[in-house]
Image 1 (cartoon, rainbow, N blue to C red):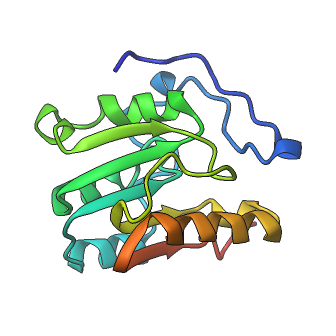
Image 2 (cartoon, helix red, strand yellow):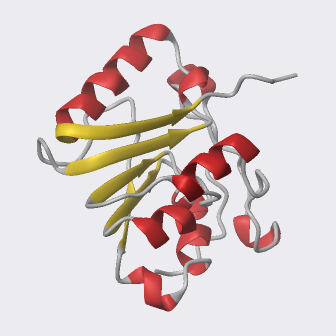
Image 3 (cartoon, one colour):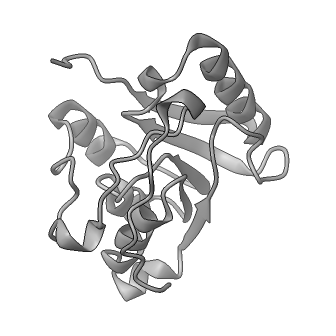
Length: 159
């Protein structure tokens, strides 16, 4: 994947939430830090199997943990520049287990029904109006196999 340095523009009226950054000028670490302690503790203890969707993955603060544990991860986001940073921060060994998919989560997900064994989504659903959250949850349900897992992390301490 090429390095994409052109910032992606946010448009809150259209529910497009991005940081508008050149991610290759922000350092190797995620712009959001290493992750929330409780989420990291949970992920480090959790066992994963199968194919997982990292929904709204951004620049990938949790993606390498998912890749270490799952059989395959599809990292998705509306901002291809953030996903470009995620790709370039993934070891060459782990890239064989990674697919990058750019799409807007308020639209139909570009996956077949029952495609995933799990969905991981953090730090984004609280941004959307209720009607979009319902639509996103419906799409998550559609792409999950029966008896799959969902891991959500909601922002709870926003100032």
